[in-house]
Length: 288
Image (cartoon, rainbow, N blue to C red; front, side, top):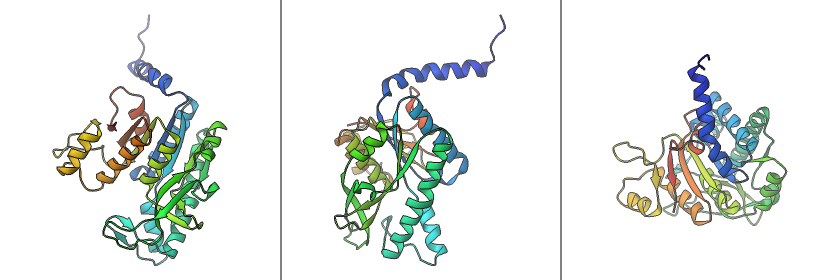
């Protein structure tokens, strides 16, 4: 009998390893925050869209919340508006908010929906204005600075999202909230994704980032993290900078009923599948 090529056997092993996870997560909801380098590189965008379509094919309900900070900055500069940030949060006046809506709910959302649809998915683009499902309130900066039209989620109406899922659609959400007066608010995509995941009682929340995950001071990847270890790491400054709000978003989602949260490197091809369908994963998994 002729020996099979090693690459064929490797593919079979991948499928065998993935099968228990596919069976376990069939019919479950995953909320994925898509941002960073994965959004900027065409090949990574293609990989992500293909992975999302594949997850839906195997019976996993996927909801995507996307960012777009660099694209917003580029458009603001093109229009002669200087981007302003306070402690990493965008100061959003009315002119900036118009650009945020144009970039997030327009070009980025439409392009991502088109990519997923090209690979066989049935993506539908949304923002918080659709059925006013993402209700938010205005927030100030950490030092009380006026950030303008910047909000944080206070309530997510899951009914429109569930209706789309039941119809076989993949909701792709631009993180634009709406306040009680119907005004648009600029919302951090991590916060929006965590709020959506909590409202849907998702099995998983996955944040794609530009680092491997949570790292020790020596650069070693932390593969498992719970609240006690996370709080201790933040207090001891082993977890710092932009990773702090990401970890806290994950913990908030877990408190709201999400099964597990993952912070993974979106710069790697097919990172979503590698984290979900392999025994070890490639990022940091967070549980209560």
